[in-house]
Length: 239
Image (spheres, rainbow, N blue to C red):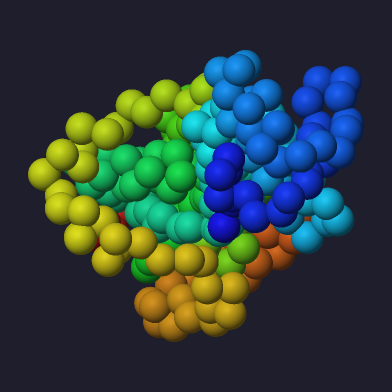
């Protein structure tokens, strides 16, 4: 507990004020502080004699509060949103609004797009969507890990921009969603998720095509080349 003025128990104190650093009678130090329109504040009570400063106590408390808040800064986590290439505009807006929420609170964002069934034949649409997400979240975050293909998934990671530079565009999509629902829907990225969980999603998927995706995913340059030359057909089987 910080002692101020007449709450200071020691008979003598070391007063630090401007260029002064002197030991003096506590009552005289309090009088000196009052004459200056300030307070005598004990800042090192365990010293012999205790060290005090002549300052404005209200301002001193405010500065201490700021330092405490700074020391309790938000611990950055990695949050995740999951997309599908067949997602409708409304659901896309909600997903992006949640993404803005995560980035706005200082967390990193992992974006994952999964292919199911015959969607795997339209990888180009997946990369197009990831490009759109990057553009739509450009006012909130920056890309740390560029979109990359692994198995039936395209994923990327974004980190938040400094708060003064952030600007939300999708907040209106969360206006009718309760705070409780938002909190319940939030989860950290599980780094131990089984990467093979999608292997048996559709037993009728062309095995040759699936194998080609796995081989291509190991070479990002081949992915770019494949996406640049692949014909953009509509999704054959969407949910």
